Length: 497
Image 1 (cartoon, rainbow, N blue to C red):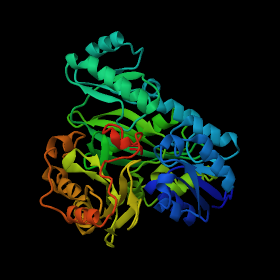
Image 2 (image 1 turned 180 degrees about the vertical axis):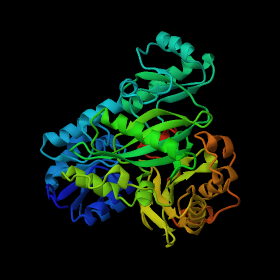
Image 3 (image 1 turned 120 degrees about the vertical axis):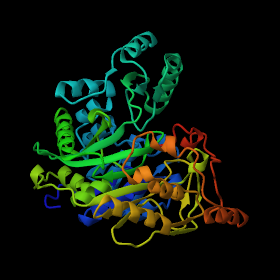
Image 4 (image 1 turned 90 degrees about the horizontal axis):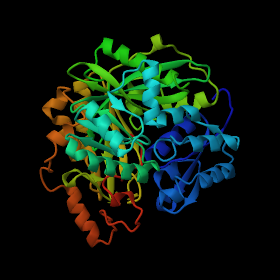
């Protein structure tokens, strides 16, 4: 980095994003410091960084969510900057301020921008003022009586939605007025448990919407650009499975309109660094609506990197160091097509329940155009305390059909024995005729793949049985910690979307 404002970065996260940030630091000649819980001792991210410091017990509140312990680790390591990754404390304005209060740089947006976009009720108001389209909805006082009155005015179906947080938590689709009371109560309870706030808003529900988001990047001197879109419509439980760029749905006119709306949204909060403005698109009317802004790097950032040729994580670090963006909007182009799929330790045939075990055999293919962003290596244990994302497979090819074919081939050639995973499911999903045709929406997986079963007994199942005989520990949803996110199928995602 030319400016050398800092030379050591503490990565306040785990898994593949911590590995990704550590590698970006190394490429820029920066020293990286990992943190880990007792459950993650020896994990890949601790081996990738230059130094690793233990935080505490496996429970996230005592480790990856414990601000004081993370700040103490940063000070002990001599770090001058903190990168939060995604999930955990990445969008916590209080943590960003705490980092700056002890004299360290926050590698992310201003705390004020995080607060403004983190409150969905306030964000809706901001977007209306900025001229960004929003769904019909309600963000006022949220007593049951007031929510019912607003719901009758909005009409059904609608979405009861937590005003704080994200990742699909605290959300309920309501198709009939008779379901509203239960939806309000359950969404409020989940929102309180997940985000510490039970406040709710309402939005009109688009049953077959497409989910398209726009990557933005801004420096400290007000230069703000969009890096085009990613389509993320293939989801389950509002959690993304497959992301791609360009979107097979957008034309140049709609792409330009959404890019301009994303920049208006980001400017309204004085945004700096990398962020993403998410939209729902009605395929019938071709109208788009603001969904939320993620004030951090996202899981799916590699597809943007591959089609633009820009390293977003490096630019996060450079911007935090005071560098200005050396290119203008007109300089940016999308080249080819990129698709990413998320490899999870989960069983798609059993409601996507998380799994655990040990990666007894692990091998990713070495093919042109394939990028692998891993969270583990062969021999690593997959435990039950955190998000079960194992690896991201991303391909870049000349066009969408070539990218789809290459990703299916990469999944078929990948080997992961000892842990139940979703790679067979992903192959079948990507081979679906409607996916190949680009006919996608956020309910596609639940509607078209709900009855999915593996074609036959896989090697993974055979190896799992053998490993039990050999005495290898497999948790398989048998968690020893009562706080494990796997104990509640609605709350096992700690990572970002």
